[in-house]
Length: 187
Image (cartoon, rainbow, N blue to C red; front, side, top):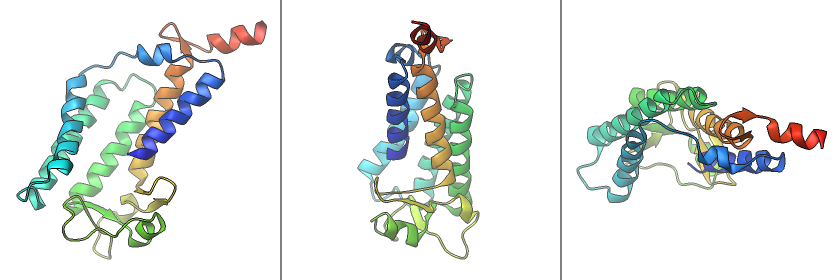
């Protein structure tokens, strides 16, 4: 998800420009990281490998289980800034995927972003139409610069990650917010 990387990088640059440091971000202690790794590996592996049997209900199963693993990982780390927002975004994405059997994508948004409209060979996306459940949660926001179509859930997930990166990069010694700005203002 390029939007999460772009917003996260922008948040880090902004915090660094305001006197922050990457040390606290690097020292962020995350719990249950194997769950995150397993969830991401399952998603990436399924899309890269894409065997013929991984269609329909099996594709949905992989998406649901891998996303649930990430939802649980984020929930376990909810004490960190922005992660409740990120978890809400992922849960919204998961809800619309489960309700429809795949992530619905607006054809107009796909064209605006310079992407092809999902076809029947895409096990993870479908064309948004009249029968789509919860269309407001589907991929409907074109982002031509990143060649992506985003959902409300994607935006919340990316905003949560950006908040985490910004707040942690603004901290010193693993937890004192704003100390850099105070010392620069007084000196």
